[in-house]
Image 1 (cartoon, rainbow, N blue to C red):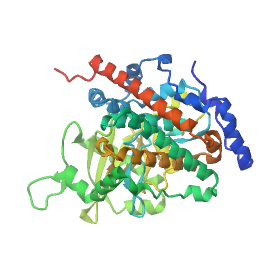
Image 2: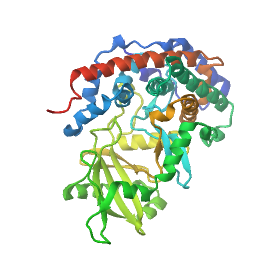
Image 3: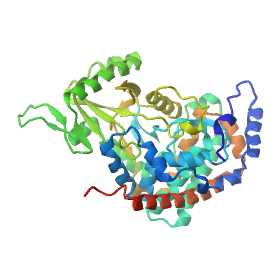
Image 4: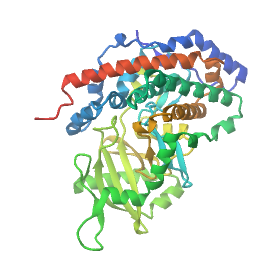
Length: 450
């Protein structure tokens, strides 16, 4: 039987005392015992994993659907990245705490990374919010736990070490949430994670981000339009991953920026006014987003050495939306993703916004501005456990900023029952993901055309 998650959400209790809120969290253990989170009843699925993925393809660019299947077929972790709709359906079948906060929605080890903050400093945080929505806090943690086990297996760790990474992540989350529950609310809102640089994978991402300047991106994805010495630059074409769009589509993309500009704060509007658009391209991004429309706009400011790249990324409804009827997301999915990002991040992209085009909804953000991501190979050796703790701490901060740390801490309690249960869940769900991946490979959907 599907759990009606939306009808048991814990609302904000601004008029209650901290001890009453803590008691509210403890009371939720009667709804779902902490040990019960270890369970994963995939046999209760009402649709197969492939049917759920196929349904999520509706409305996507038909020519790219096979490409998405091919990318998902590369490994169990790659399948997991593209199968958020499957996990959303699976989580909806489990008992829920009903303790809500803003969910990243697609919390996995490669959806944290480095980007440039408005003041120019490099920040490491959660950085993908396509599935963001308000929902039960444990859903993010279960997805992260499963991703750590899968990433551990993929990076050559023994099964015990992969499971331990999931447990360490959730323990760190719980410890930090208990700290937040006793801190002034304003301090929680501006809390900075200082242990980030201690994790080797994060240091590797920071080094990548230092090199990922707009000028570096200029050299990577654009080229001179002709052999003339002072020829203007334009996007390189590497079909199907990146290609320039026809003039009519270029006009449509650029016209959509007028709506986007209106929603920026005045100082960002002023800054954007110094940049003129030079070229527009279609770009394939990620794994879960393959098939959605994604445009890149190349701008120049004070000459050719002052590039700016904006990404205009189509946003479909969150994969969790069908199972959270009371979440009441905004009618615009680009706005949903942007506001989810601002709710969870300490600092966000200064050009973050949204627009619409041809009846579709889009998120707007900078492309590759000092971006740096974690690769699976970065998690070999001791890197996995250190990185797992960073994941737990950043999720705790995002949930505390957008939810109620006292209620969550009340549910978690002082022991490790919840962390141990999610370590078990991560392993069980990883096993199921591997079975789903094998089903995809057998289906023939990822085979190249003859």
